[in-house]
Amino acid sequence: MSQLQEPQANTDPVLELTQAIDSGSLYQVRQMIKTLPTAGIAHLLESSPPRTRGVLWQLIDKDAEGEVIQYLNEDLQNDILSELNAAQVAELTEGLADDDLADILQQLPQQVASEVLQAMDFQDRQRVESILSYAEDTAGGLMNTDTITVRRNHTVELVLRYLRRHESLPEMTDNILVVNRRDVLLGVLPLRAVLVSDPNTTVSAIMREDIQAIPVDMEATQVAQLFEQHDWVSAPVVDADNKLVGRITIDDVVDVIRDSTEHSLMSMAGLDEEDDTFAPVVKTARRRAVWLGVNLMTAVFASLVIYLFQDTLDQVVYLAVLMPIVANMGGVAGTQTLTLVIRSMALGHISPSNSRWLLIRELGVASLNGMLWALVISVFAFFWYGDITLSYIIAAAMLINLITAALAGTYLPLFLKKINIDPALAGSVALTTVTDSIGFFAFLGLAQVFYL
Image: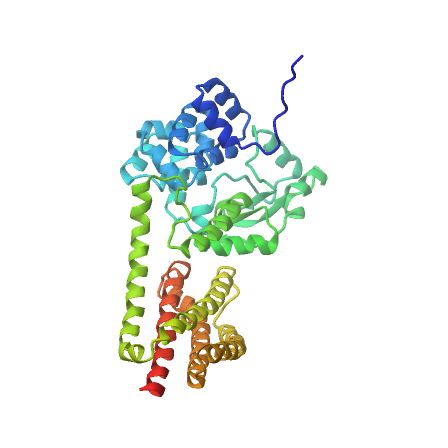
C-alpha cells in the first residue's frame, strides 16, 4: 500500500507555487496561500518573478489584500495600486491602521490620494490627514492616532468599565495615556497597574508622570534610538504645546531600523532600499544608469590625473604595473573608516565634541597601517624590479594615500550631511575619487621628481 510522502523540511515555497501554477493547479495554490500569514504572502510575492506574482495576487482573498499590501516594498505597492482606481484603493485599504494607510497614500499620485481620502468617512479622513501633514521620516509620519485616554481624577473601576466598552484595544497597548480636558499629556497609566490596583484607587495615584514624550517633529532615526535606549513598547507623541497627537509603537520602529539598515547597504551601490528584486529589465537599467554615469565621471577625473604624468609613464613603464596597488589600498582603508563613521552617525554616536578625537584615532590607525604595508610593498617592489628608488617612491605614496583615506573617510560623511547630502549615497563615490586621485598623484608625482 503506497504511503503519502512527507514534505521535506527545506522545500522552497516559491518553487512549489511556481510548479503548481505551471501545472494549472490553481486550487492547490489558493489553499497553500491560505495557510500563510499576511506577511508570509507578501514575502512570497516579493520573491516571485512578475508572471507568478500576477497569478498569486489574483488568488489572494479580497479581505486579506489590504493586510498583504502594507508589507510589500514601495515598488511592488506602486505596481499593484497603479492598476486600481481610487474607489478600489479605498476598498483595498479599508481597515488598515492610520499610519500604514498614510504610508500607502504617500506613494500614490496626488490626485488619486485625494480621491481615496474623499471616499473615506469624515473621522477616518481627519485622522489620516493629520498624519499626512507631517514628513514621512518624522515622529508625526510614524505615529498612529488610535489612542486611549483617561483623566487623572478617574478611578480604576471607571477606567476598567471604559475599556470594556471597546471591542478590542489598539495593538501594542501597554499604557493608557492620561490627559486633561485640553488634551495636554500629563502622564501614562500602565495597564499592569490597572489590573492589580484597588478599584477605588484614582488614576493620579498610580499614573507615571516621569515619561518622555516624543516631539511630533523628531526625526524617525532619533525615535528609534529612544525606543532602543528605553526598551519601550509604545510612546506618546506630542506637539509643541505638549498636546497629545498620537503614539508610536515598536512595530513602526522596527520598520525604521530595517529601512535604515537597507538604505545604508543599498546606497553604497547607488540603489534604493525599496527597489524590487524582480523589477523589469528596462526599469532596473534606467535606475542604475544614473549611478553608473556618476561613477564614470569620477573615473574620468582619476584618468585625467594619470594623463598629467603620461611622460613619466612613458619613461618608466613599470610604474603602470604598481600604480593600482596604491589606489586600491587607499580605497579599502578609506571605506573602512567611511563605513564606521556612517554607522556611528546613524546611531547618534558622533557629535562636534568627539569628531576631533575620532579623526586623531583614525589618523593614528592609518599611520601605523601605512608604515606596515609601505614597508611590505617597498620590499616587494625592490625584489621585483631591483630598484631602490622605486621602493622609496611606492612606500611614500602608500603612506600618503592611507592617511588621506583616513581624513576623507572621517570628514566626508560629516561634510555631506552638513550640506544635506546623504553620506551613505554619495560617500563611497566621493571617497573613491579622492583616494584614486591622491594615490595616482602621489605615486606618479614622486616618480616624476626622482626619475625625470
